Length: 255
Image 1 (cartoon, helix red, strand yellow):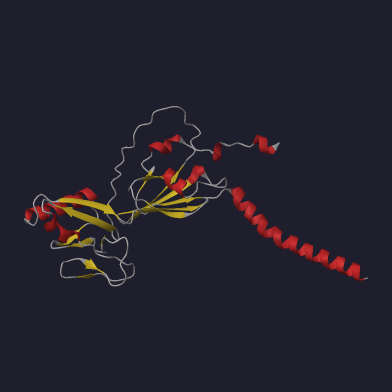
Image 2: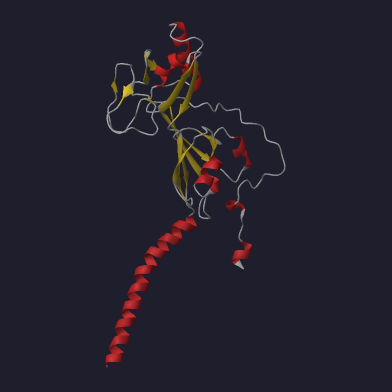
């Protein structure tokens, strides 16, 4: 009887969403480059051979100190990392071949692309250079009451909170969909936001799409906490009772 009367509102997504058309999210989804980001930078030109030297990969291995070689690349000792790229150092710079240190932290990919392209053209190093930049460490973390807590690597550089939860196996029945915590570090500022996934308003929220290094935490419901607490309390009592029964039975059989 109690099960049949239970409400499914808190267990379902977007309870108040019907057939409708939602306004597109106008938030700027272009992530800002931060310290410790790893960037893949490719340079093209009319003469591919002249551009080749700017595409020499530098390797990054966590825990090693970068050193500059003769070409101005930040190279680290140790085995090559499959995600080789340009590490944004603690001062916010990358070491680019020939051009030397370039400020990257605080810029968008487009702004850094324009900076590198303009320097190559202004110094007449390349004719009509084409520069493309990608993040190699674009990832988000999903923790808490989900089927499979995980770190999601985002190759497309765009992911929504629903996609991230889907990759983590979705929220379990013991997770609070109405109070999902989003933790974001951006330009040295840490912000937290609570998102209600029961409400259609989240689809138009500026936090619907995640940014690099975002952390999504799903809080467990009180029933899950209570169940866990009761289990931890009851199991020792049950085991003790069973032990007592075994002892009593053994004594009776012996007598």
